[in-house]
Image (cartoon, rainbow, N blue to C red; front, top):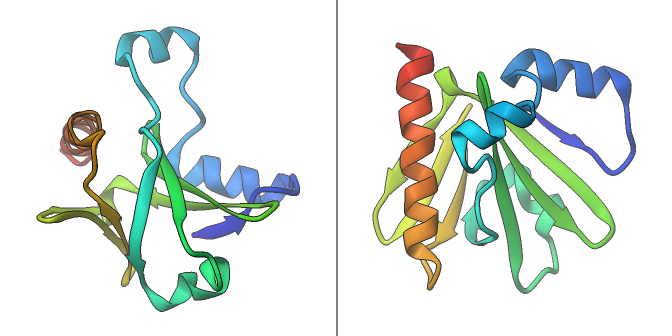
Length: 134
């Protein structure tokens, strides 16, 4: 589910919270140590994202952990977009890049100098997915 988050829309926020859960509270954030990824450079993406990234030379994204999934946050100029992915639809691939797949769409991230931090975060996502899916 991709939605525009630059304008607050109550129905979209509720749909996102129902899909991936509400944001972690203060104490859960402390227990998890990190609920957000470092800023990651997007290498490539599926067709559904073309309208969001057209004419951008470098695109960045962040990943946020939620109890039942993740949210990939990305921007284009002044617009902020979210891609909500529940754990049961999430597929992660690690090779020369980090790739997220869900619902036939994908986003590929470059492995860079903050690779250790990014990989630690991706491992945490995989652990939470395993706990959630079971």
